Length: 422
Image (tube, rainbow, N blue to C red; front, side):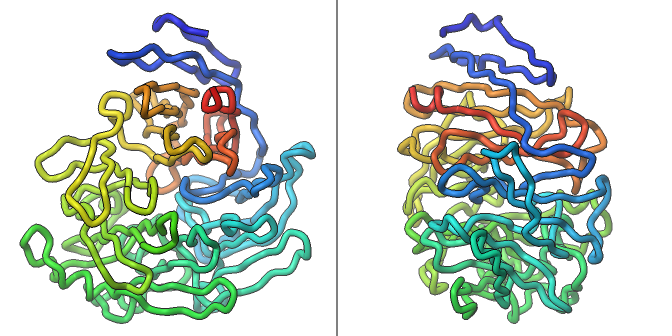
């Protein structure tokens, strides 16, 4: 059904699906009332946008539960891990807990790619961070010796980095409970990136912080800064790693500084730590996703160009601006599965009215479909803000997201099969 641009719909949950404006197209209405799959009084959420929340069958979703809001986690605060049966009234089953988590990325909870039975998350064991795997059929848990940041799409290995280092230099993205042993060293050689075999737990160091600090940035020496790695992601063919190398000139003094005052460059490297390439040297890289083994869609402002979502070809200078008008604000972008990378799922940060927009963008037709606008109460700010972090199920037919528009942190989904399938 085609709609006039002044047409709109309202819902009982105060969400709206407005038609996006654009010079070359008119969108169609896509509004459906979100289905809430968790309820209070406890808060529930999943975490980051680049991981599988739902199993390959589409029946089971993962989630986290916590009994407090509006403060930073302490090392003693436990997070409950749950399995939600979407076909049995969204029944919650506790499958574990963790002392290693944060508000933005939770505990890196996710399904192991290719598996319909095994999930993984990070935890703390004594004075070390580890990861746990759980088999939903046998209900057995295994412990791996290092925490994970991201998993290879082939399901065979993980990539990790030092979470206490992240917490020291970007609070809210690391974990409380274990201090950074190198907190007085600007670019330690002892920590950096590593791979871990998901079956054996065998780990291999790839790159150290000292290695990256020694590489000049736009011709300038950056070694005399405090360095860390963040936001790791493995290419679809499991052959290359993408990550952000960040640094700041001084140690943090407060939470306001945690969100500002650092420089970023986006790096790719192979899984042996070789063939390193600075994919975006601008210093502005933010959220990103691999489109295929050779291309990365990233929000950035390349040197001499405008802000936007740029499709960058790895190991080349080739780049293309995607959705110049439709996707003109930073958000958490992914490609909708099973759509030949034609559809992008995205969100925004809160606008002046504290509404977060959730939308789809169809690249070939330059068509934007707004799925809803969700109010974020003012108390959800800073480290404990609740970004939607939208993610699809593995069939690409439902969008799952975290939201506070009903007053507490809960999880929801929307069916998009009639949009991406048409």
